[in-house]
Figure 1 (tube, rainbow, N blue to C red):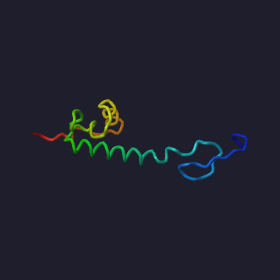
Figure 2 (cartoon, rainbow, N blue to C red):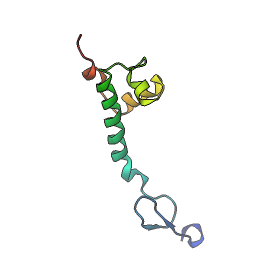
Figure 3 (cartoon, rainbow, N blue to C red):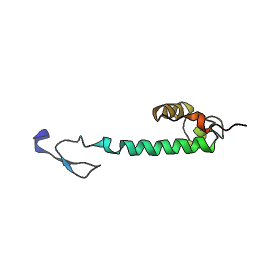
Figure 4 (cartoon, rainbow, N blue to C red):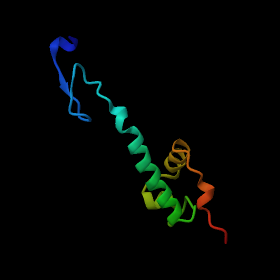
Amino acid sequence: MAFGGYTFICGMTGQRVWNDACQVTQCQPSLQNQEKEIVEAALAESKGKDVGPQGASAKLGIPRSTLDSKIKQLKIKKHKFISEQ
């Protein structure tokens, strides 16, 4: 028995586990999908512009560097949101 016989209730699954290492990764794809949808919506609304008062980073309330990191992490193709003018 790990941890002297203490069990924990996993916050994700509600199951008893012998340690606090519950399956946090179970919700990872869902969270990433939500993040991707939010970032893509902001890019679509700003027509692919990521900086400035009407840019996606301003709409999301995050620094441009954070937005750039999220775009890279979530494998978003920013160019598909840029409108031709």
